[in-house]
Length: 206
View 1 (cartoon, rainbow, N blue to C red):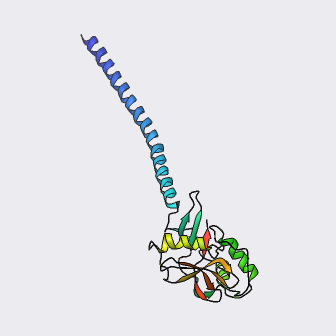
View 2 (view 1 turned 45 degrees about the vertical axis):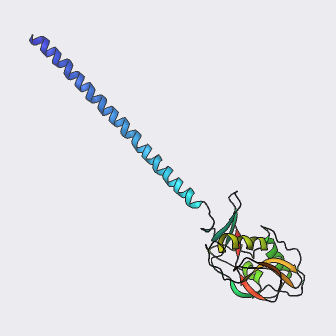
View 3 (view 1 turned 135 degrees about the vertical axis):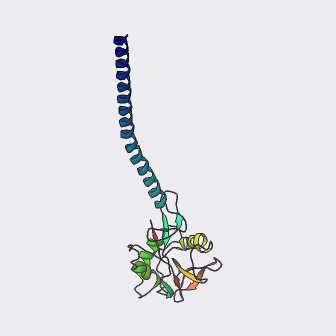
């Protein structure tokens, strides 16, 4: 009886020791898995947050300005937060600069053409061309179509404050006039003389 009891308790003790050892091994394996999973989870949360913050939206601050156009391919246009001038001439009244366009994504080329063809100091295009703002130096005077998007997507929606008056575009109309837009009602005109003084809001592409 004694021998049998001793053998039985010995087997039970061995089983308990084996069970405890397995539990320790399982805990160790679980702990080894938890840490990498926590790290991966934090990484995913961090990257997801970064991607969300990096996505430009209409009216958000991005790439040195305020987003007013996104083309669906990760590119678009921003305008400066404030006007670069409250009253400046388009310049070179009576001179046919030529080579400017009304279209979207032509403002930069228009500005370059104006600066190259008009040496008058302090004109609208040159103010934008020389602008160094928020770490960017590639600002330009928007084309009339770009100016229209600025009005419709920001000004009309009340997302950015604009003066309720005329703004210059870089789109020439003819030798005595250039295209403008009124930010009170959105009306565009190609008959305002280049010597008239209107507001300027610079733009850059991203």
